[in-house]
Length: 99
Image (tube, rainbow, N blue to C red; front, side, top):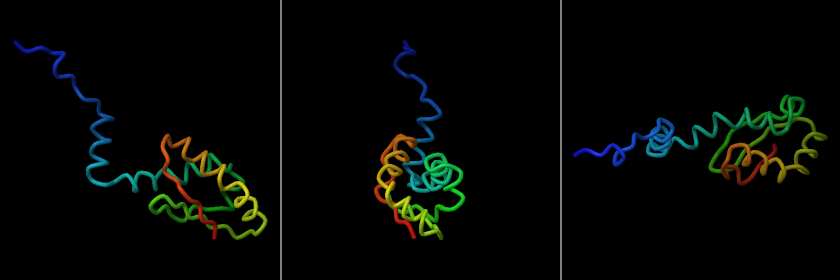
């Protein structure tokens, strides 16, 4: 006798998460979401001045030309890191390097 409760179907989300993890695509998925999250955290005005360069093994690299904005971001770096991780729902950013 086949009991339907023994074999519950897996959600598509779980299948995709296992695939992403199995293929080592986590870093690529984060890289795709970081610019959007960055803009949400710092706001449109700062995001226009401070661009995400890349994300590499927990470090987010930011490029900014204005020394005034650079100072502002340096002062807010821990808060920004916290907000990015909160929005993503996991600790993905360990450090922010501002160039």
